[in-house]
Amino acid sequence: MKERFNFSIPSRAVLPLISIALFIFLVSTDFWLGAKFALIRASITTGIFLFVVVTNIELLVPQLLIKRNRNLFYVIAAIVLYIVAIKILLFLSRETFHLLDPELFFAEHLELKEKLNGQLTFEWIWPFGFGSVFILISILVSTVLKLSNHDEKEQLKKKELVQGKIEAELKFLRSQINPHFLFNALNNIYSMSYMQMPQATDNIAKLSEMLRYLLYDCNEEIVALEKDITYLHNYIDFQQLKTESPQNISFVIDIQNPQFQIAPMLLEPFIENAFKFSRLEENPEGFVTIELQQKEEQLTLKVKNTVTENVSRIAVGGIGLKNVQKRLDLIYPNAHHLDINEGEKEFEIKLEIKK
Image (tube, one colour):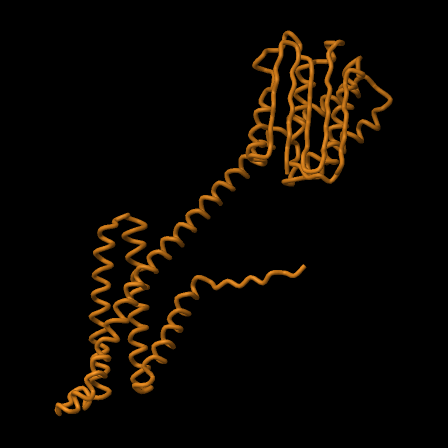
């Protein structure tokens, strides 16, 4: 596959390049009158062009249009600038012609005047006609380009501010989630150690793996789905240790691509919420079922759990789900769908994420 060659001219170089092109064009146009004459008048016209454009984009537009939004004052100032530029151009063009060829300019004989009448007329009409139109176009175009450039910079600033705000909010939301998960994991390992279970060594290794995920992988914007699944497996294993009915916990996985990219700690709050409010250790008939499916560019998570009667309706979902909803809006705008169904005794969520 061939790489496309991109060539862009820096904005600072545009005006000098246009000035050089204008100078060359004017010299070539007037060269038939003599090299010296052509060079001098091209220099005058180019200098006036630079004066008009620089004054407009560095003074008039920034001060009157951008900062103060004084449209009428700007129009008046632009007209004054236009008239001054035309006056200067005509005066310098006349003086140049006078100084370089005084005999032609002050021809006394009528025959010579008639012979050169067309040339003299051209010398007066050319700077006025071309110069006046070109200066007017220069003012209009430079105004449009300056305003367009200003709008682009403002949009870029707004985009950077929004992006910075999003990143700051994401970091804040992660900082709220991670300690809560860590606390739950430590609480589980403490319960396991307190009961002196023989699987202590394996579970300590699982806890170490969970901590590694929290401390390192969660600092990344996205991680492989398999890392999230490993964390979920370990977390669910700890939850099974707390209940006398581990068979009531179901975790079904159907994954096509283990390297499917996902934001870290995005699925965990839904599962944490299910265990938190089902309270399996107090309710032998309670259950938690989790289904995680990934096909092509879509990831689907389904979580269903019982809700203990003495759990407040407001408490179900908690701050964890509110935070994850904010993260979904920030990371997957218009690319996710979340359904939450809350019944009297059951709570169910379905999350769909599309890349």
